[in-house]
Image (cartoon, rainbow, N blue to C red; front, side, top):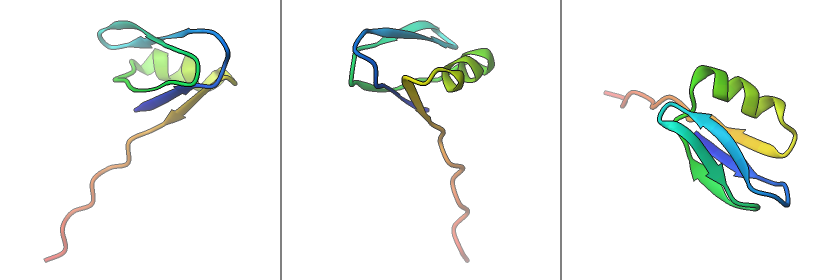
Length: 59
């Protein structure tokens, strides 16, 4: 998932590999844990763009 920090301070999110810090204005591709995703979505200064499932090729 892509996570963007829109605040003026560094923010941390809970990824499956541990805490990932995101600088102000930065976007990172992060593998969020289930709890980390829920918490990140609840914060107004983090924008979370979830990966869309790949479409099967038409035959």
